[in-house]
Amino acid sequence: MESVRAVLIDIDGVLTVSWRPLPGAVEALREIRAAGFGVALVTNTTSRTRAVIAGTLREAGFPVDAQDILTAPVVTAAHLAEHAPGARCLLLNSGDIAEDLGDVILLDQEAVEDPEAVEDPENPEGASGGPDVVIVGGAGPEFGYAALNRAFRHVRRGARLVAVHRNLYWRTDEGLQLDSGAFLLGLEKAAGVEAEVVGKPSRAFFEAALARLGARADEAVMIGDDVESDVLAAQAAGITGVLVRTGKYRPDTLRAAGGTPDHVIDSFAQLPALLRGSVQQ
Image (cartoon, rainbow, N blue to C red):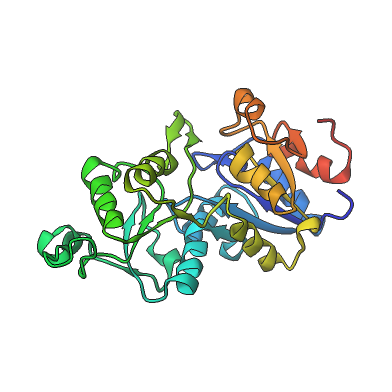
């Protein structure tokens, strides 16, 4: 830990649950900032923009602003700008993330639903009026049969399938809730394609966070409650991984994981002590 100068932090399940601070989290983040560590809050959350997230966290006492937060939609916008510039996109997401998607061209949902706008009898596999890209964000009430079937049909016609993340579930104050990864698996299988995943656990997501902090992978630590997407994915990118026993953490998930976290601690409140080398895991 002596070489660490940058701390990447997941939000949901680590700092908060249902946007309420976990015990000791506010104080721990203040201590980490006071010690001079670079901080980036890295989240797959797709229900709020980073500006709204920053405001919510500040109201709870966390010392953060929007520039400290890297969301999966922001990385999605950068990915599309590089790999599909000018693409027309159909977004399936619960929550308004248009601000974080920047210049991404989002098609009007009603126009895309109209068969006259998407069907081309001469070329049924490549309808000219349909989207070039289907973006799958975070799950919620919008993920009904009609919406998923529409996404499936466009991907079958040749639209690229881009996933903001592939989380299977997350924890709220009402317990574990299904997330879009559970639906994404079905879309991939049914359409016979593999989605381009741009949020965690993609390596590009962690590299974008490191670039913001001007840190190398061996100078950074990632702390999260998802052993696969947060911790092991970070370790695969050369970053020290720390798993917390809060949020979506479950002992059986850790036992079944595809690797071993570098560190496991009870909560984010213990991270300052871990960084000092004085915490017992």
